[in-house]
Amino acid sequence: MSKNHVHKTLYGLADANNFYVSCERLFRPGLNGKPVVVLSNNDGCVISRSNEAKPLIPMGAPAFQYEEIFRKHGVEVFSANFALYGDLSTRMMNIIGRYTPDMEIYSIDEAFLKFDGFENIPLEEYMSGMKKEIFRAIGIPLTIGIGPTKTLAKAAARIAKKFPGRTRGVYLLDTPEKIDKALRWLPVGDIHGIGRRISAKLLQMNVQKASDFIKLSDSFLRKRFGIQVVRIKHELKGNAVFDLEMPQPRQRIATTRTFAGHIRDFDEMRERIATFTSVTAAKLRKQKSACNFITVFIRTNRHRQDLKQYAGSITLKTDYPTDSSIELSKLALTGLRKIWRNGYDYKKAGILVSELVPAGERQLNLFVPTDERHHRLMNVIDRLNLRYGHNLLKLGGQDPQRTWKMKQARLSPAYTTRLTDIIKVYT
Image 1 (tube, rainbow, N blue to C red):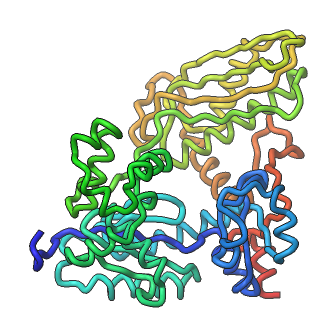
Image 2 (image 1 turned 30 degrees about the vertical axis):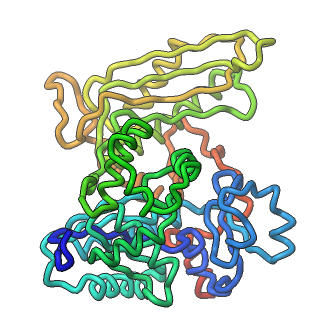
């Protein structure tokens, strides 16, 4: 790469800072400057930390082991409010998508960008404008890295996050000198795509920095770690190997649960299967798919050998590809009746839909009535459940009083999707 080489195509990584914590602080500005953590499902482990909390609590720490630390240092602790985070993420991604037509949503708080044909645009200034717009419109702070490959863009984002005073949250790796300096700084364990297991082996070989890593031969890396690690090396050297990945619809969707106790009553199991089917159908509609097959299964507790053991499963063909909660629930309950056996203590059950097709390209049966009349109803149900909570509207076969909830003892309000909670912000 020559000294004056100009990359026609550059990649960017937009990364929200401490995203879950930033979402919580957005509606409670009194948390700014205080240590804050967000916990995983069922309040298990720490999955997001404010900068003030990072010296006190490691990422992934079991919450119950750090309760004393929380109290001692006044750490504010929140249950994961994924509905809130998902809504704010969608708003953030919509703004990001206006700055380049090529975007890969990498996670709830990260997006890779591709700048093809942006040679005459000062990208640092351009991305600084995007960063300011997102903070002004949503209130989420962002870090942005830019480089000739996705791996170098990730490295640039780490530099921007590590040195916010110098970079102001945006850093561009666009010259051989800057790339060389970045690789001499970047720890091998922080290279995008190099996991803990591989980085531990590299450190044992005294490969400390990314600059040491790229000196290893392709043949050695391929033999020891596989072709993917070789590709990462070439990315670090400025040769784009990984392009943006567009999301692909899932080919199978499942909803399963292990029960807290045991189920012996058929009506109770019927209600559970109706609920699982409704959840699965909503997932189908979200990715704009319809299914041709539905599988129902029930099973006893295999860890309780003192109890009678049984596992039943059945797969049924739909009359036509469908995403209707009503049609799929009818079929699922038909399957449940065929596999149900009295006298057993059931511990787990679930629903799986398969052979999915795009909902807009379904091959219908001329002689079988379709679920077209359900589409408007399903759309209304999905919109209302999204806005007011997924348990607002249910099928007749579901228990209106029963909900499945994770342990979330410190859950914040639904500030962006529930009117009564929005009012709390201004009162």
